[in-house]
Length: 344
Ligand code: SAH
Image (cartoon, rainbow, N blue to C red; front, side, top):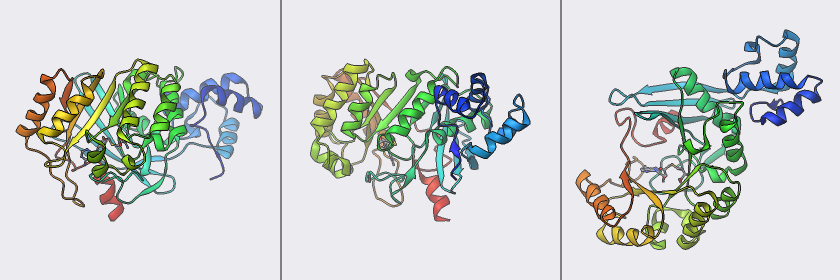
């Protein structure tokens, strides 16, 4: 395992690396293309390099393994859920969703999670480890290869808290949007956070063009604390201020995510408070009827009651959608596929 992870190197770093082992800089371009455009899984495949160079690369570098061990395909909407295994045996989930405007992939950023949100399946076993930048891009690469279809949008909303794996996450964005690689526009990348304030601000200062989604889930500090332990660390006003700062710095409209939990955060009072928070902001609100997990007894509101909640916000000029449930026939809540595998 002490071979260097070659996929996590930026294009410029790879050039320097190749020079350091006595290779010409143009080799870096070929290798980067193999790794990030032709999506190679091994050095052996890199047939425009000499056998000697391929062997040398193989002895000093590694292409971190991201291997499909399960795939489920929805009959309803063609959504694919993948379970990928890493070199050390850990597994993560990724999802391919087909929309009219193109394919979206949802990836994981950590194995497990330590944020402890009450309704979330990914956090139940705690955090196992961070994913490497290479492992995150390779979730997408494998999906593109397996499906044979281009990935247009990427959302970092799978298992894990991306801003708890900050450096690897930022590097991942750079690899994915690099013009020498898949060149996915940063505007087509969304990162979702539970609200780690210092890292939200740091991210704003990176001057990326990605969309920031904040998991709000409660319209007051008290409500948020009931569902999200991270709220004990960062109070709601600070979190909102960090969102405003992100908008100010990047010009990118914030998305707020709000998982509707019946009887907990979906009352008239909640809607009223939410309106007060959001009407002064240029934002989008995504309501997610909570996906019940077997470890907790949270329930989703009825379709009608979710629609009511939405209408109240809409009437007050808030840009709001209810997230369409994708692949409802293939596995309950996010993270359930992995949990089933781990429990086995
Ligand atoms: N750690 C990041 C990404 C998590 S997943 C974050 O907290 O934002 C993306 C979204 O799905 C988050 O808003 C998360 O709170 C929400 N989510 C997780 N489990 C859910 C469930 N069972 N039902 C509805 N939404 C859920």
